[in-house]
Image (cartoon, rainbow, N blue to C red; front, side, top):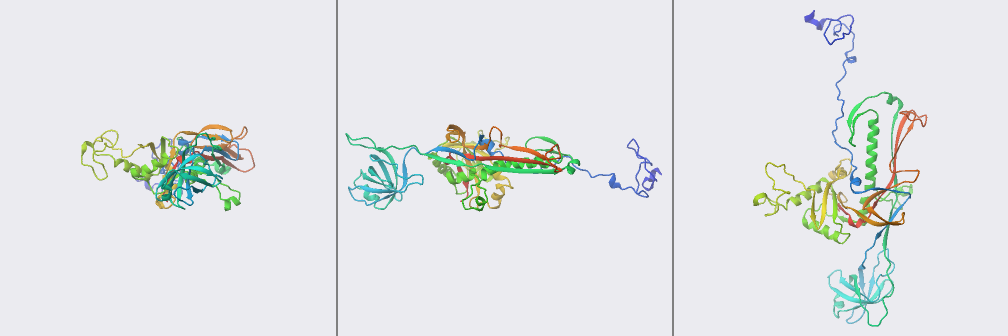
Length: 483
């Protein structure tokens, strides 16, 4: 019998206190009606496998910005205007040797009259040929002024109806004359943004809460342990926190005649929209050469000339920058340079790389007129966000590859506070009062899970935030995109 247990089918089974094979505890297949599925359960892994790694994309604003309270439906601030006066579209009237010339100025939308006064000296340059001349302003009307050129022939070369650029460089007065007429008021640019309300919700019914199934997880916020139905709540929370950032990046204001505005949704100004409209846009794909970066540096020279800047880039732009910098390095020991390397250049990295070193093929930054620090931006690489767009249509018009953000802070006049304040170039303003803080609200309703607010047999977790992004000095930002 002991040698043929597989054919033994006892009429009953009796468990043993020890894990030993006995005739009374063996479950055979010959005559019992025992269902083996009741005893043998499938092997399961207790720990959840993290096949996508860290799935969150929020981090950008935490690195470059701050969060400040606001108690209004609108945030307004003033930014400095230019100190000096320049007009880029000035049309010359009749030009004759030795005669005064009338100049018609196309004014920007925020000006109603020319900000030039009699007695000031100006330079005019032909927008097509580059020929220039210098003149003194004789009289000024609303959109026209009369000038007298110092040169006897230059005004003839500039020619009638030519369009010129003009800027003021000084003044000249005769002896014994009155002083300068009129005065110039400081011209501030007033900007504003409107906070939007973000919401999300998770719900689980009371019956499901009674069936507990534990799963061991490691969460994106660094915690680890066991979760059951709250795993979905936890992921809802993480998703909402991502949306609090990505909404500040992507938000656009609604056009007056749009369906969204008609329905009462007005939008907000995200950083992409603001830089695209008030900042600098590199629309020629990725800058891959020093000549490209020299153009960018030249543009920054004409703006705030911020010394340190951070480049938040997608993977391809990061590689292009690395390849550009690597191409400027020679091979160690003066060897013959490979293709793309410059003979006699500096060795790759701080020290000469040898066979015993792990070769670092990336750069964290470089200096070219200004300091540029490079950081991969997960939002632009994530396939469920903009990374999917970049992969599918990598060179489509409007595809964003990176953003240059000036480091540090700047002084602005806060319209709400009524005084000058030092603010990061990028920061979030959220609604808050003495009794209500809407930076990040979370609350539970229902009648399950400890809640007792209604007769709903469920637990509902609610999330809410009301915020907007302030992009100060957008003229110091650069958006890298195609088209």
